[in-house]
Image (tube, rainbow, N blue to C red):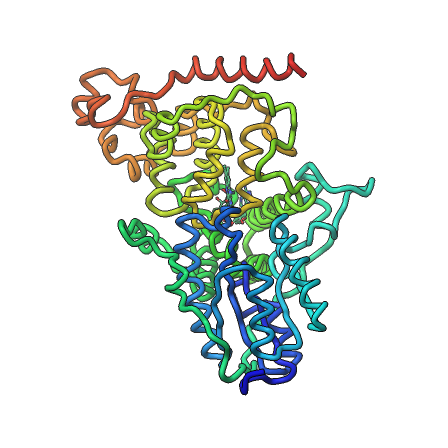
Amino acid sequence: MSSSQIDGATVIWFRDDLRIADNPSVCKAAEIGYPALACFILEDCDAKLGRYGGATKWWLYHSLSRLREALTELGVPLVVRKGDAASELMQIVKETGASTVLWNRRYDPAGIETDKAVKSALKDEGIAVESFNANLLTEPWEIETSSGGPFRVYTPFWRALRQRGEPPAPTPAIRKLAGLNDPPESLSIDDLALLPRKPDWAGGLRETWTPGEAGAQARMRDFLESTFERYAAERDLPGSSATSMISPHLRFGEISPRQIWHAACHHAAREGIADKPLEKFLSELAWREFSYHLLFHFPSLPGENYQSKFDCFPWKDDDAAFGAWSMGRTGYPIVDAGMRELWHTGYMHNRVRMVVASFLIKHLMIDWRKGAAWFRDTLVDADIANNSASWQWVAGCGADAAPYFRIFNPITQGEKFDADGVYTRRWVPELSSLPNEYLFRPFDAPQNVLKKAGVELGETYPHPLVDHSKARVRALDAFHSLSSAA
Ligand SMILES: Cc1cc2nc3c(=O)[nH]c(=O)nc-3n(C[C@H](O)[C@H](O)[C@H](O)COP(=O)(O)OP(=O)(O)OC[C@H]3O[C@@H](n4cnc5c(N)ncnc54)[C@H](O)[C@@H]3O)c2cc1C
């Protein structure tokens, strides 16, 4: 027992909840009143599970740095470790003589398994363990269908969630929390090797984001004050920047869905904003809840087709096509704009995510799991529940999925949702002088139009990777082959 041991110290294990306000573990530690210690463990299994990709590692570095600053202000040390969660926690507990460990729950299968094992190991040693809901409006087991099972369809799920009434009001950031003096050894955040070095590709991320709890609150305020009112009307238009862009902050728990829900409701009431944008926004937040509900009840969602008839889908192994897609060089401007936005900022507008995912799965017939893995590596909001459920939704193999035969046309999607071309011209600048008429199908433009716009297909911008109509027929044939095989 070291001299720093204090009988009854409390350990707060931070994971995807990197905030102080509305954090039940932090509140509980304050309520217990013993000296507290915060810890973060980069788990051995994180790499194997693909829990963090390149972009989320970048985010994690900055978010942890901001959390450490906030904890330091409170007087609470943050101990950073790397390794097996159970042994690292046990060691911290032994080194500090802690009697309680607190954490906020997670819902992915590997997280649940680890937490169960850690809990039972700690309890065997006589350590009290408490866990809380910090990151969902409704935990997956709290609502069920009238026949008693999990929801598989979004609309009745949302209705049931709505019927539960307002989520509990968020708790403000606590101001007093006694910290443990003389904490055990810690790695530095730099030791976790989270930042890209050679090359440092994170310039676009730095330009776009401010990770951390204060950044999340600022982003939310900015959204409510500037674009919330037009959310319902414009959320599908990538050029209008009408959505909140709160997703990476939510991913890391820098802000809670309860805080978001109440902030939106208060703002709408105070400013007399019509119901429509508020309802639409809350219903989108509920899609995230639905994804977690699905992931919890169907834990194979990240890796297996929810509808098993898709197991014999004739996916194509085409590295060249996958490479062109991922680099934004498919020859379809709206697809390329989305993939380049992703590469530069770690984010992509939801409408465009649907279009690029559909293109990969249906036009190129590449397995949705390859696309999901690319998103996991490049999105700053990469989230196991939302990413898996959304890819399965687009592929048509998920629960309540878009029917497979709904094949997004990358030309008309661009014309409809980016009619003035603002978004596409921003991300595909080599086409910026093309008139709107040909912006989404440069391959149809007459030679003189291309020349005037400075476009040379195959040189300054690629020829289309596939012909839309032929690709559509090929995808439908493959799909029908599934039905006849079933
Ligand atoms: C193929 C594909 C992959 C996706 N991968 C992810 C992912 O890894 N992480 C992620 O957070 N979202 C993912 N989404 C969902 C959605 O695109 C993003 O949540 C949204 O674009 C985030 O932008 P925003 O915060 O401005 O959203 P807003 O429109 O402002 O919505 C507010 C919040 O509601 C939730 N939300 C909104 N739309 C959806 C949706 N369709 N599904 C689930 N939740 C939603 C998000 O938490 C979002 O931050 C994916 C969608 C597709 C089609």
